[in-house]
Image (cartoon, rainbow, N blue to C red; front, side, top):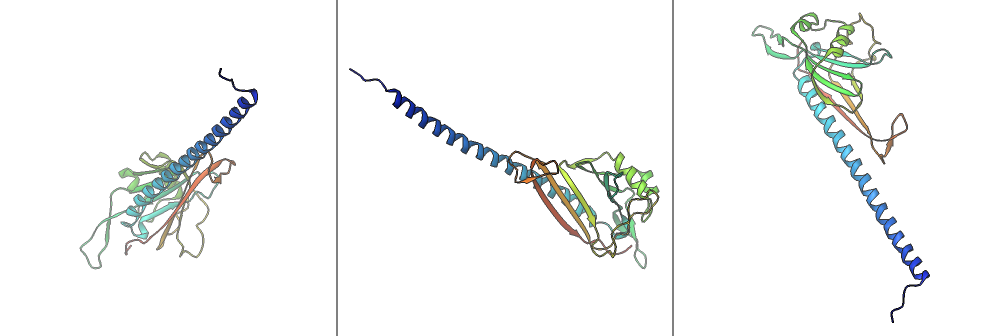
Length: 221
């Protein structure tokens, strides 16, 4: 004759089973959370490196005179625009003079996205080397239709460490701040993720990646 399980044995078995299930769920949750964080971190690094590689490649084809920057240091200016007039050749004269591209290469941060494109011939002619105003740059940045390089951009800073003073506040009719060697680019990527190790301005968990590059321009004006 077989003896059935007592109530105490059933309760003990159920308790042990619950403990095992709880431990397994905890391990699975921690693993999935860690995996999600790693995926986000890798994605942010790849976006930042790709965007920075494009910018550095274009900047090394410029002289300081061919670079204009619109800084988003005004509450009414939500974009950061980098205008590049690349050198494509050099005149065979004495002394040699650079020949600039017929188009401008533009980078524009709009919200949390970074775009790369080129201006039209009309814009290239109206915004000549060392010419144009910050309003011109803002207009080009707001109408830029180009390739999206990054979509989780939390900050883009473009500075010249050797400049004695910080760039002037935004003025519609003002000229872009002067550019000197070297130029420092800083990108901060940020994305909300469950179990993130940091907190964003909204207090939500996130992952963040910061990348900084220093660029030296070509010689000559």
